[in-house]
Length: 231
Image (spheres, rainbow, N blue to C red):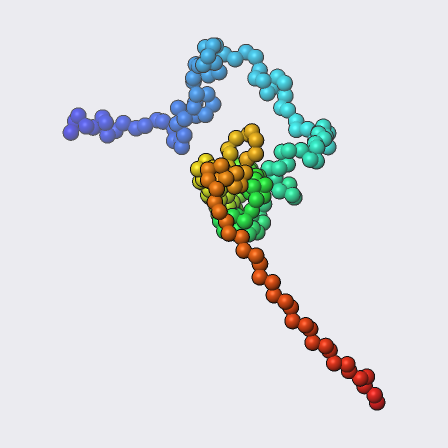
């Protein structure tokens, strides 16, 4: 008990405070000797920063911008619709018809199929331009309608390829038949088609020509004379 007595009788003379001296020193100064030292040059920054030296730039008024004149018929306008809006509404994207069927495309000429193909290419360019603008702005709408419209255009292009493939195979078959036909000459010299000439050179074929049967027409009956109506 004699050993514990001095510890019990000891009294603290420290003043009561809610903030320690170390915390107060951290607020006023963190005691960091490398404060302000450049990590690249390993020395304090003596010159002011660029923003302090040259000042903060001010935005230019829109009225003072230089007006750029563009051609109304420029080719890049083909990537936009007639109203030249980069981001249409879903209602505008949903306004389109169905795709062309193969049966309808079979009745088209080569020139019509050519024009329709490049019209589909132009439409796909417009859809891709709108998709890029939608990715940049992230409005959160229009993706489903644009994909459905693009799918319809691709079905039309697929039908055009199908019809052109059928015509190509038909042309190959007709070319092979022309090679086997002696009356057709596949060359750029002379007459291409000479009907009956090759047949006369090989053998003579007797053809019995019969005189046509003459039938006398019956006389037309005379029309009865009608008297005018008397009242």
